[in-house]
Image (cartoon, rainbow, N blue to C red):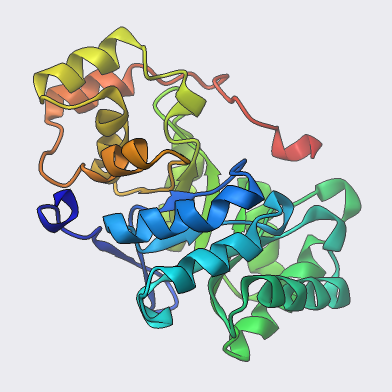
Length: 279
């Protein structure tokens, strides 16, 4: 079978002395009724990191899929995220308990603040709640999602605790160079959602050319770009064939010419998803 011929994703070390697989499966927009089978398929294929969120309404299916895989709990890395309405210290703690119950687990491997929602002005207190959850061992690692430099500077300055991960929109069409540089300066790992540009980059002629030269698909070339940049990626798919395709990226690397060509695709205005300042 294919999964016996590819190696597992390498682990990316985190600032808190833990580590996470560099490649995982995202389940955004995966229907709740399909999630358990999608997750089981991914884990059987070789994935070991599953990324969900309370807002996706499929945490229950993620937990069911993990259990159906037959893997031990400590062999699977589960990420979930705090929904926007639950910002604030006490509200965040209560929301986390609900996520644990839906997942059917005693802990999560990574817990993230989904969006900073700066207009509400609560993300500092929310972050303090996550710090407590990590101290209690129920969130093994903690981080944020969709935070910009100004948000990161503030939580670090006011709490003294640096997020292990910032999960953001990042792909060749929106490479976020300044944010990535800040992450490196503080030891924050960059994890990328929509690494395929929500499918828009799959037909780009430059990506197609690079993929063909390596005997790979455009999706595989795009995921490989993230890995070669030292980024974590969580491509989403609910189809078994594409789940397998997205995992078959460990038998090649992009060269300097490939990387230079993809660097030229960057567009500072290439954001596809929501602007974190307006959520």
